[in-house]
Length: 410
Image 1 (cartoon, rainbow, N blue to C red):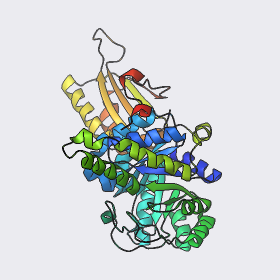
Image 2 (spheres, helix red, strand yellow):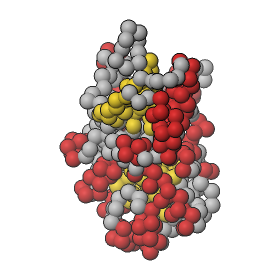
Image 3 (cartoon, helix red, strand yellow):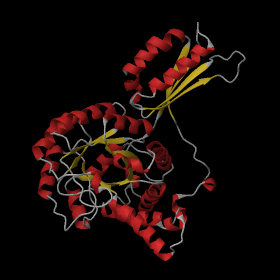
Image 4 (spheres, one colour):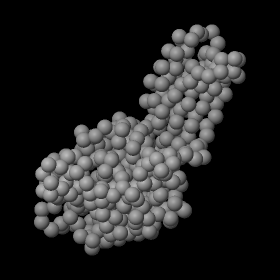
């Protein structure tokens, strides 16, 4: 079940007056805990990977695990690149499995921020991917993640928000109204009047970053004024760290697994609490009923060659794998040769996985594809057939061979 379209998920939350938690993960413990909590709460959830955390894990490996976890989940899931640093980061995130992306240019001047975000929007929308933009600047105060966001808070201006949404065509907008990354110092002072005016002006899902330390009542007021995606990390990190410290105090000679005992449950408890506060608990069935599933497309080409030898065919396939995998929305490129050598109808194949059916058109018209196909491939492969198809189902490993999220306690 399932990955679902992230834009559909957020639109559902916006129409129905609740928010989806976007929980940053930094390890397998976080991934399992977030999914475990979402299933307990029967809530939709966004698995978020922030580029500011890439120094702590291998993004490609982490995203592969995240994609696998999302696809075997019992609740609707989206996968989001948080605080991407560049256009190239957004392309990489999409090609590795994200169906939502944010490239954070909020520290730049308005024109620079809008131009970069529009470039990302055009590319991502051609891949069917949801885009988040940020206007205004949410600074860091203290804590593990605060140093990643230096400087002073810059509040979002209502007039600029309207112009920004129009220029960038983002699907959701992160705003600055007084929250901070990391831990708060003193009582939070949120500008709800500003948020209300932004919501009335732009009329699309709003996002809040820097939420640790807010009260339940403040979350409810944020949601009442259009906030439908709430990014959350510091409190999860603190819950994990405190569990590790408690284990160390209890047994100073404990090894890694002893120190990590209970970490998943501590993270899951905080995630589950948030899903109830955000109003997402119990919403899974409604999201699945009303939102499109996120399905990849397999582009298959079977072909024969004329006038070239095996070495040249191998070189062409290698070049194609290198070039075509750079195109936004291309998840993987596999080349093949027929197993049976006794006069098969077709001797060679391409299997190219697209992130979404929208990529069929954007891939076809992309300059890298056109150049490779017209100049290199088609001249030697006149005898060919191609087809695009959606995977009807993916068979998961037997339950007995893997640990269920419900059993992953401690």
